Length: 422
Figure 1 (cartoon, helix red, strand yellow):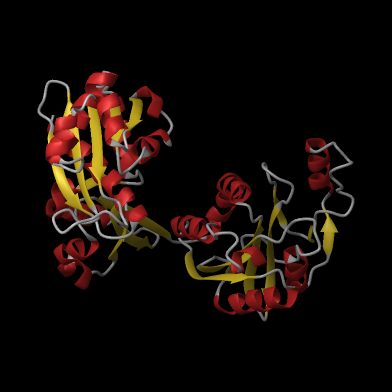
Figure 2 (figure 1 turned 90 degrees about the vertical axis):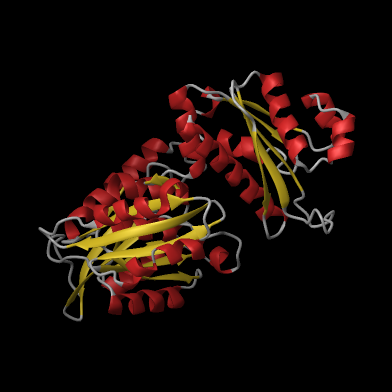
């Protein structure tokens, strides 16, 4: 096998191989494959398969050799550390028929960053396949590298990346992606149409004709608890025009207000950005969701500009003490009811001084339901200064966690729709 120059071939497809026994035993979740597939797709490189292999040299070698039979590029993550079970570089060097050597520039950079020799020893680590393109690790010690070689008269490449996502992702974005950009002749255009308030099956029904007749532009719906996404994609050959916008325009016509975003923002970010743009403040009063709505918004940068706080009023006593509800209301209407949801939202707005207040009261289960009030019943209300308070009843199937998450995102969507009508 011989090392090739970097511009001697084009990458059309790749396989991502995640290395680590901790992945196989369920100790760690593999998020690297998902991230890399998305990045490669944007570069015009199709992901052929995801593979997970443990810290075993022979199995790793077999997985890489199989992947090379079907792809131009193999991307590995993990197994690049200094311990005895970190075998990726050794296996790749064997496959590419290249010696493992020390890179003086890498060693000098690591010694400058980690001067404590009692903790860090770079005398024999890291070693890289000779002639590899090196990518520095700004967050850790293991560099990435890309090896070009010829296997059975076919041009191949293996990209080795560190396993920890907080090291791998910035390395790929800052260093690897710009380098790989020249290897693909094609580009994928992806547009993501994000919906809430309609289920995946109903959404698919509304676009069945588009799916059945898709050609150059492909349409793929998929769903999670927080959204339904319709991906509109086109693989563009050099000189080909972008046809995805016309499909997106058609989806806008069909789904209307169910679309909360055409792009990458999740629902909570769309709501937060709207509140910031309108300079509106928000507070929450939460019973069954127990602070999850406020936490969902607070996880986003900039939330402090609009989120005043949240009141967790799980018990009737806290509803009376913190929100000003009367015992008579709670007794006559019941804690899971329209009047209580409205009173919670209005009490929260008065007590906090927020422009808007969201309230949640319901039965997340698994116990406590009745024939008239089954588990999964949730009342959500939104109060706003100078306007009427809106309240709606929902029923969310599933376990306790699913009910709570669905309630939060339904409340955020209710708020989004109200903001759009102002």
